[in-house]
Length: 292
Image (cartoon, rainbow, N blue to C red):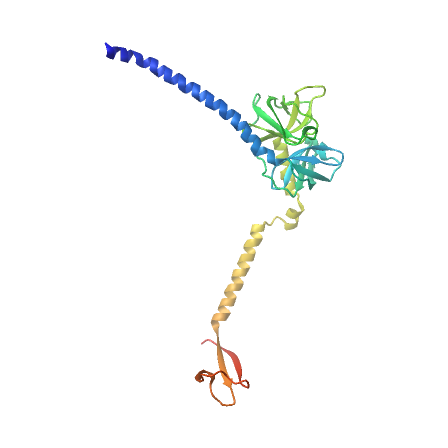
């Protein structure tokens, strides 16, 4: 009888274990979700700076090569040189290296080198969680969270990603970040007389701007397409050839040194135990002869 009861209780025990495991997994996932947002912000925040130009202020973020930053064109328009300030840091001067007014983007080159952010791998999806980081109203390092409300939105210039994040003056040029810390777009504008309707330019246009700037840079044109690696290889080959030539010349000739000692006593120095007299001198004759 007891054995039958034990067997009948097994399904209930299994169901209880499955329920406990499911609840534990849900709690763990929820806690990790909150922790991941904090980790993403901690990783991205040092790469976002405040941009100050002639009468304008916005945000920018490290993207592309070290020292390159992306921002909005309307933030730096009319300002060939700007000042970049990291969160709680000192302002560093930068210059506008390239612009794309059609997509409201600009590329800044500066002497500070925070870790460049990476572009999102997947296309943005409606309902996905996103973060906006920037300096709204001059409050640097501000973070806002929301979702993607729409994609491929028309009628907003180049900005086609719509979010429900409350953007303010100073957010322009800051990054729109996905849950993995990758850049989806560049925050650029808000809808007039709206609350919580913001727009961002897809990050692919920033990648295209960097590619065009790299292909037309003065250094690339001056080198004529020859890379530093090619120049280094040619220099190494020339050095190797010169070393081989020098080795052959030394091998074909042997040098001998003959040392004579002149003294008033006419005695060889190596046969004497005492030091040479002051009137003695050492004469070194160098001569060489070709090897046979």
